[in-house]
Image 1 (cartoon, rainbow, N blue to C red):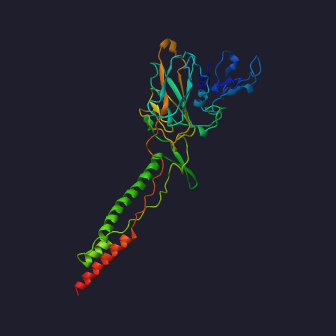
Image 2: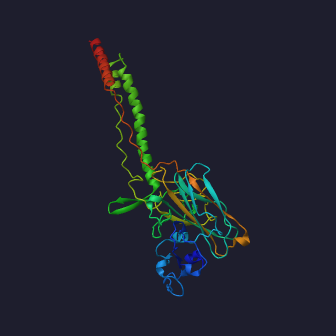
Length: 387
Protein backbone atom coordinates (compact mmCIF):
# COMPACT_ATOMS: atom_id res chain seq x y z
CA UNK A 1 0.00 0.00 0.00
CA UNK A 2 1.27 3.47 -0.89
CA UNK A 3 2.21 5.92 1.84
CA UNK A 4 -0.60 8.42 1.23
CA UNK A 5 -3.31 5.76 1.06
CA UNK A 6 -2.00 4.22 4.26
CA UNK A 7 -2.00 7.52 6.19
CA UNK A 8 -5.39 8.67 4.94
CA UNK A 9 -6.75 5.27 5.94
CA UNK A 10 -5.53 5.84 9.54
CA UNK A 11 -2.61 3.48 9.07
CA UNK A 12 0.90 3.71 10.50
CA UNK A 13 3.36 4.05 7.61
CA UNK A 14 6.92 2.91 8.28
CA UNK A 15 9.93 3.31 6.02
CA UNK A 16 13.48 2.13 6.39
CA UNK A 17 16.01 4.67 7.61
CA UNK A 18 18.64 4.96 4.85
CA UNK A 19 21.83 3.21 5.78
CA UNK A 20 24.06 5.96 4.35
CA UNK A 21 22.14 8.60 6.36
CA UNK A 22 22.53 11.18 3.61
CA UNK A 23 20.91 14.54 4.29
CA UNK A 24 19.17 14.51 0.90
CA UNK A 25 17.11 11.44 1.75
CA UNK A 26 14.35 13.14 3.74
CA UNK A 27 11.71 12.04 3.11
CA UNK A 28 13.21 8.57 2.64
CA UNK A 29 13.36 7.56 -1.00
CA UNK A 30 11.25 4.52 -1.82
CA UNK A 31 13.11 1.44 -2.98
CA UNK A 32 11.98 -1.74 -4.69
CA UNK A 33 12.19 -4.11 -1.74
CA UNK A 34 8.95 -4.39 0.21
CA UNK A 35 10.88 -4.51 3.48
CA UNK A 36 11.90 -0.88 2.97
CA UNK A 37 8.38 0.36 3.67
CA UNK A 38 5.12 -1.03 4.95
CA UNK A 39 1.71 0.07 6.20
CA UNK A 40 0.83 -1.12 9.66
CA UNK A 41 -2.35 -1.10 11.67
CA UNK A 42 -2.90 2.39 13.07
CA UNK A 43 -3.90 1.06 16.48
CA UNK A 44 -1.42 -1.76 17.07
CA UNK A 45 1.43 -0.82 14.73
CA UNK A 46 3.54 -3.44 12.92
CA UNK A 47 4.08 -6.73 14.69
CA UNK A 48 6.48 -8.38 12.24
CA UNK A 49 9.70 -6.51 13.03
CA UNK A 50 12.82 -8.64 12.85
CA UNK A 51 11.10 -11.57 11.11
CA UNK A 52 11.07 -12.88 7.53
CA UNK A 53 13.89 -10.59 6.50
CA UNK A 54 12.26 -7.44 7.87
CA UNK A 55 14.76 -5.33 9.83
CA UNK A 56 14.33 -4.45 13.49
CA UNK A 57 11.92 -1.67 14.40
CA UNK A 58 14.80 0.61 15.41
CA UNK A 59 15.83 0.80 11.74
CA UNK A 60 12.48 2.29 10.69
CA UNK A 61 10.83 5.69 10.89
CA UNK A 62 7.06 5.49 11.41
CA UNK A 63 4.37 8.13 11.24
CA UNK A 64 2.23 6.66 14.02
CA UNK A 65 -1.48 5.99 13.86
CA UNK A 66 -4.28 8.58 14.11
CA UNK A 67 -3.84 10.99 17.00
CA UNK A 68 -0.21 10.00 17.43
CA UNK A 69 2.79 12.19 16.68
CA UNK A 70 2.54 14.39 13.59
CA UNK A 71 -0.62 15.77 12.03
CA UNK A 72 -2.00 14.17 8.86
CA UNK A 73 -0.47 16.89 6.70
CA UNK A 74 2.97 16.43 8.26
CA UNK A 75 2.78 12.66 7.86
CA UNK A 76 2.00 12.96 4.15
CA UNK A 77 5.01 15.25 3.74
CA UNK A 78 7.29 12.43 4.90
CA UNK A 79 6.06 10.12 2.14
CA UNK A 80 8.64 9.11 -0.48
CA UNK A 81 9.35 11.60 -3.27
CA UNK A 82 9.48 9.56 -6.46
CA UNK A 83 11.11 11.49 -9.27
CA UNK A 84 9.47 9.76 -12.23
CA UNK A 85 6.06 10.52 -10.70
CA UNK A 86 6.75 14.06 -9.51
CA UNK A 87 9.75 15.88 -10.99
CA UNK A 88 13.51 15.79 -11.02
CA UNK A 89 13.86 18.34 -8.20
CA UNK A 90 12.24 18.40 -4.79
CA UNK A 91 13.97 21.35 -3.09
CA UNK A 92 14.16 24.92 -4.40
CA UNK A 93 15.96 27.99 -3.07
CA UNK A 94 15.18 31.61 -3.92
CA UNK A 95 17.55 34.44 -3.01
CA UNK A 96 15.11 37.33 -3.29
CA UNK A 97 11.50 38.19 -3.96
CA UNK A 98 12.06 40.28 -7.09
CA UNK A 99 9.52 39.35 -9.75
CA UNK A 100 9.83 37.04 -11.54
CA UNK A 101 11.56 34.75 -9.07
CA UNK A 102 9.78 31.44 -9.22
CA UNK A 103 9.82 27.99 -10.77
CA UNK A 104 6.90 26.12 -12.31
CA UNK A 105 6.79 22.38 -11.68
CA UNK A 106 4.78 20.09 -13.95
CA UNK A 107 3.46 16.91 -12.34
CA UNK A 108 2.52 14.30 -14.92
CA UNK A 109 3.46 10.89 -13.54
CA UNK A 110 0.76 10.00 -11.04
CA UNK A 111 -0.67 6.52 -11.37
CA UNK A 112 -3.67 4.88 -9.79
CA UNK A 113 -2.01 3.76 -6.59
CA UNK A 114 -2.14 6.93 -4.49
CA UNK A 115 1.02 9.04 -4.76
CA UNK A 116 1.97 12.44 -3.45
CA UNK A 117 4.54 15.00 -4.51
CA UNK A 118 6.09 17.17 -1.81
CA UNK A 119 8.27 20.21 -2.48
CA UNK A 120 10.32 22.46 -0.22
CA UNK A 121 10.89 26.13 -0.98
CA UNK A 122 13.48 28.16 0.90
CA UNK A 123 13.67 31.93 0.54
CA UNK A 124 16.60 33.84 1.97
CA UNK A 125 14.82 37.14 1.31
CA UNK A 126 11.12 37.79 1.07
CA UNK A 127 8.61 35.04 1.78
CA UNK A 128 8.25 31.58 0.21
CA UNK A 129 4.92 30.67 -1.32
CA UNK A 130 3.14 28.55 -3.90
CA UNK A 131 0.25 28.62 -6.32
CA UNK A 132 -1.51 25.59 -7.79
CA UNK A 133 -1.90 27.06 -11.25
CA UNK A 134 -3.89 24.30 -12.93
CA UNK A 135 -7.00 22.82 -11.40
CA UNK A 136 -7.63 19.17 -10.75
CA UNK A 137 -8.73 17.23 -13.85
CA UNK A 138 -12.43 16.70 -14.39
CA UNK A 139 -13.82 14.13 -12.00
CA UNK A 140 -10.65 14.11 -9.90
CA UNK A 141 -10.32 15.54 -6.42
CA UNK A 142 -6.88 17.02 -5.83
CA UNK A 143 -5.78 17.41 -2.22
CA UNK A 144 -3.02 19.56 -0.77
CA UNK A 145 -1.15 20.18 2.45
CA UNK A 146 1.26 22.97 3.44
CA UNK A 147 3.75 23.58 6.22
CA UNK A 148 5.57 26.87 6.84
CA UNK A 149 8.14 28.13 9.32
CA UNK A 150 11.09 30.41 9.91
CA UNK A 151 14.03 28.04 9.80
CA UNK A 152 15.32 29.26 13.17
CA UNK A 153 11.94 28.38 14.75
CA UNK A 154 12.17 24.61 14.26
CA UNK A 155 14.26 21.59 15.08
CA UNK A 156 15.50 20.20 11.76
CA UNK A 157 16.03 16.69 10.45
CA UNK A 158 19.77 16.07 10.45
CA UNK A 159 21.63 18.66 8.38
CA UNK A 160 18.60 19.49 6.21
CA UNK A 161 16.04 22.29 6.07
CA UNK A 162 13.24 19.79 6.70
CA UNK A 163 11.63 19.79 10.15
CA UNK A 164 12.42 17.00 12.60
CA UNK A 165 9.86 14.20 12.61
CA UNK A 166 8.66 15.19 16.06
CA UNK A 167 8.44 18.93 15.31
CA UNK A 168 5.06 20.24 16.43
CA UNK A 169 3.11 22.63 14.22
CA UNK A 170 -0.15 24.46 14.77
CA UNK A 171 -2.84 23.14 12.48
CA UNK A 172 -4.95 25.65 10.57
CA UNK A 173 -8.70 25.19 10.33
CA UNK A 174 -10.22 24.83 6.84
CA UNK A 175 -10.43 28.26 5.29
CA UNK A 176 -12.87 29.46 2.65
CA UNK A 177 -15.03 32.50 1.96
CA UNK A 178 -18.15 30.87 3.41
CA UNK A 179 -16.40 30.78 6.78
CA UNK A 180 -15.24 34.37 6.51
CA UNK A 181 -11.57 33.64 5.82
CA UNK A 182 -9.94 35.56 3.01
CA UNK A 183 -6.47 35.66 1.55
CA UNK A 184 -4.17 37.56 3.88
CA UNK A 185 -6.30 37.16 7.02
CA UNK A 186 -4.03 37.02 10.05
CA UNK A 187 -3.98 34.43 12.78
CA UNK A 188 -5.78 34.88 16.10
CA UNK A 189 -3.43 35.66 18.97
CA UNK A 190 -3.51 35.16 22.73
CA UNK A 191 -3.02 37.66 25.54
CA UNK A 192 -2.77 37.39 29.31
CA UNK A 193 -5.79 38.63 31.22
CA UNK A 194 -6.86 38.39 34.83
CA UNK A 195 -7.52 34.74 35.56
CA UNK A 196 -5.88 33.33 32.45
CA UNK A 197 -5.62 34.09 28.74
CA UNK A 198 -7.97 35.35 26.05
CA UNK A 199 -7.89 35.37 22.28
CA UNK A 200 -7.51 38.61 20.38
CA UNK A 201 -7.72 39.10 16.63
CA UNK A 202 -5.37 41.10 14.47
CA UNK A 203 -8.32 43.36 13.65
CA UNK A 204 -8.75 44.13 17.37
CA UNK A 205 -5.12 45.21 17.53
CA UNK A 206 -5.36 47.34 14.38
CA UNK A 207 -8.46 49.08 15.75
CA UNK A 208 -6.47 50.06 18.84
CA UNK A 209 -3.67 51.28 16.58
CA UNK A 210 -6.16 53.40 14.62
CA UNK A 211 -7.67 54.93 17.78
CA UNK A 212 -4.22 55.97 18.97
CA UNK A 213 -3.34 57.34 15.53
CA UNK A 214 -6.46 59.52 15.70
CA UNK A 215 -5.17 60.97 18.99
CA UNK A 216 -1.87 61.69 17.30
CA UNK A 217 -3.59 63.34 14.35
CA UNK A 218 -5.62 65.60 16.67
CA UNK A 219 -2.49 66.51 18.63
CA UNK A 220 -0.56 67.40 15.49
CA UNK A 221 -3.50 69.42 14.14
CA UNK A 222 -3.82 71.45 17.36
CA UNK A 223 -0.05 71.88 17.47
CA UNK A 224 -0.19 73.69 14.14
CA UNK A 225 -2.76 76.14 15.53
CA UNK A 226 -0.70 76.69 18.66
CA UNK A 227 2.50 77.29 16.70
CA UNK A 228 0.77 79.77 14.41
CA UNK A 229 -0.76 81.64 17.38
CA UNK A 230 2.60 81.75 19.15
CA UNK A 231 4.30 83.32 16.14
CA UNK A 232 1.56 85.93 15.69
CA UNK A 233 1.55 86.99 19.34
CA UNK A 234 5.31 87.32 19.43
CA UNK A 235 5.20 89.68 16.48
CA UNK A 236 2.27 91.87 17.63
CA UNK A 237 3.70 95.25 18.69
CA UNK A 238 0.49 97.24 18.93
CA UNK A 239 -2.76 95.57 19.89
CA UNK A 240 -6.16 97.17 19.55
CA UNK A 241 -7.32 96.93 23.14
CA UNK A 242 -6.68 95.35 26.50
CA UNK A 243 -9.53 92.93 25.86
CA UNK A 244 -8.14 91.89 22.47
CA UNK A 245 -4.68 91.54 23.94
CA UNK A 246 -5.88 89.35 26.76
CA UNK A 247 -7.92 87.31 24.30
CA UNK A 248 -4.92 86.73 22.08
CA UNK A 249 -2.65 85.83 24.93
CA UNK A 250 -5.11 83.28 26.26
CA UNK A 251 -6.42 82.01 22.93
CA UNK A 252 -4.37 78.83 22.73
CA UNK A 253 -2.35 76.74 25.11
CA UNK A 254 0.06 74.03 24.09
CA UNK A 255 -1.88 70.79 23.41
CA UNK A 256 -1.09 67.90 25.71
CA UNK A 257 1.21 65.38 24.10
CA UNK A 258 -0.32 61.85 24.02
CA UNK A 259 1.34 59.26 26.22
CA UNK A 260 3.15 56.38 24.55
CA UNK A 261 0.92 53.68 23.07
CA UNK A 262 0.06 51.14 25.76
CA UNK A 263 -2.52 48.88 24.09
CA UNK A 264 -2.27 45.41 22.63
CA UNK A 265 0.39 44.80 20.01
CA UNK A 266 1.78 41.94 17.98
CA UNK A 267 4.75 41.95 20.36
CA UNK A 268 2.96 41.75 23.72
CA UNK A 269 0.52 39.05 22.58
CA UNK A 270 1.41 35.42 21.85
CA UNK A 271 1.41 33.39 18.65
CA UNK A 272 -1.24 30.76 18.10
CA UNK A 273 0.02 30.17 14.58
CA UNK A 274 1.33 31.97 11.52
CA UNK A 275 3.82 34.88 11.30
CA UNK A 276 6.71 32.44 10.75
CA UNK A 277 5.94 30.01 13.58
CA UNK A 278 5.60 26.33 12.58
CA UNK A 279 2.12 26.16 11.07
CA UNK A 280 0.40 23.77 8.69
CA UNK A 281 -2.90 23.16 6.98
CA UNK A 282 -4.74 21.27 4.27
CA UNK A 283 -6.66 22.47 1.22
CA UNK A 284 -8.50 21.24 -1.86
CA UNK A 285 -7.60 23.19 -5.02
CA UNK A 286 -10.68 23.96 -7.06
CA UNK A 287 -13.00 23.77 -4.05
CA UNK A 288 -13.22 27.25 -2.57
CA UNK A 289 -10.58 29.96 -3.13
CA UNK A 290 -7.39 29.02 -4.94
CA UNK A 291 -4.25 30.88 -5.92
CA UNK A 292 -1.29 32.02 -3.84
CA UNK A 293 -0.91 30.90 -0.23
CA UNK A 294 0.65 33.83 1.70
CA UNK A 295 3.38 32.85 4.13
CA UNK A 296 2.40 33.60 7.74
CA UNK A 297 -1.23 34.37 6.89
CA UNK A 298 -4.40 32.54 5.94
CA UNK A 299 -6.32 31.92 2.75
CA UNK A 300 -5.67 31.70 -0.97
CA UNK A 301 -6.16 34.31 -3.69
CA UNK A 302 -4.77 36.27 -6.62
CA UNK A 303 -2.33 38.48 -4.69
CA UNK A 304 1.26 37.38 -4.14
CA UNK A 305 2.26 40.15 -1.69
CA UNK A 306 0.28 39.40 1.49
CA UNK A 307 2.87 37.43 3.48
CA UNK A 308 3.19 38.28 7.18
CA UNK A 309 6.07 38.25 9.65
CA UNK A 310 7.23 40.49 12.49
CA UNK A 311 10.76 40.97 11.19
CA UNK A 312 10.87 41.15 7.43
CA UNK A 313 14.62 41.28 7.17
CA UNK A 314 16.38 38.69 5.05
CA UNK A 315 16.49 35.27 6.72
CA UNK A 316 15.80 31.64 5.85
CA UNK A 317 12.08 30.91 5.62
CA UNK A 318 10.55 27.63 4.49
CA UNK A 319 7.31 26.58 2.83
CA UNK A 320 6.59 22.90 2.17
CA UNK A 321 3.67 21.87 -0.04
CA UNK A 322 2.31 18.43 -0.87
CA UNK A 323 -0.18 17.59 -3.63
CA UNK A 324 -1.89 14.25 -4.04
CA UNK A 325 -4.89 13.14 -6.11
CA UNK A 326 -7.75 10.82 -5.40
CA UNK A 327 -6.14 7.32 -5.29
CA UNK A 328 -8.14 6.27 -8.37
CA UNK A 329 -6.63 8.98 -10.60
CA UNK A 330 -4.20 7.78 -13.26
CA UNK A 331 -2.38 10.46 -15.26
CA UNK A 332 -1.20 7.95 -17.84
CA UNK A 333 -4.84 7.52 -18.78
CA UNK A 334 -6.13 11.06 -18.26
CA UNK A 335 -2.97 12.74 -19.63
CA UNK A 336 -3.56 15.81 -17.46
CA UNK A 337 -0.65 17.85 -16.09
CA UNK A 338 -0.78 19.67 -12.77
CA UNK A 339 1.28 22.88 -12.65
CA UNK A 340 2.60 24.19 -9.36
CA UNK A 341 4.34 27.57 -9.06
CA UNK A 342 6.96 27.81 -6.32
CA UNK A 343 8.74 31.05 -5.48
CA UNK A 344 9.66 33.92 -3.16
CA UNK A 345 7.27 36.86 -2.89
CA UNK A 346 7.02 40.26 -1.14
CA UNK A 347 5.63 40.81 2.33
CA UNK A 348 2.46 42.78 2.99
CA UNK A 349 2.89 46.54 3.25
CA UNK A 350 0.80 46.57 6.46
CA UNK A 351 3.04 47.28 9.47
CA UNK A 352 2.57 45.10 12.54
CA UNK A 353 4.44 47.47 14.83
CA UNK A 354 2.56 49.82 17.19
CA UNK A 355 2.33 53.53 16.32
CA UNK A 356 5.08 55.78 17.61
CA UNK A 357 4.53 58.56 20.12
CA UNK A 358 4.51 61.97 18.39
CA UNK A 359 7.30 64.45 18.94
CA UNK A 360 6.76 67.13 21.52
CA UNK A 361 6.13 70.66 20.26
CA UNK A 362 9.35 72.66 20.22
CA UNK A 363 8.59 75.82 22.18
CA UNK A 364 11.18 78.54 21.66
CA UNK A 365 11.52 80.11 25.12
CA UNK A 366 12.95 83.37 23.79
CA UNK A 367 10.21 83.71 21.21
CA UNK A 368 7.57 83.00 23.79
CA UNK A 369 9.06 85.55 26.22
CA UNK A 370 9.24 88.14 23.46
CA UNK A 371 5.60 87.62 22.68
CA UNK A 372 4.58 88.04 26.32
CA UNK A 373 6.75 91.18 26.74
CA UNK A 374 5.33 92.80 23.61
CA UNK A 375 1.81 91.90 24.61
CA UNK A 376 2.21 93.27 28.14
CA UNK A 377 3.77 96.44 26.72
CA UNK A 378 0.75 96.95 24.55
CA UNK A 379 -1.52 96.41 27.55
CA UNK A 380 0.36 99.01 29.59
CA UNK A 381 0.24 101.51 26.72
CA UNK A 382 -3.50 101.11 26.40
CA UNK A 383 -4.04 101.52 30.14
CA UNK A 384 -1.95 104.71 30.42
CA UNK A 385 -3.67 106.16 27.37
CA UNK A 386 -7.02 105.82 29.06
CA UNK A 387 -5.92 107.76 32.18
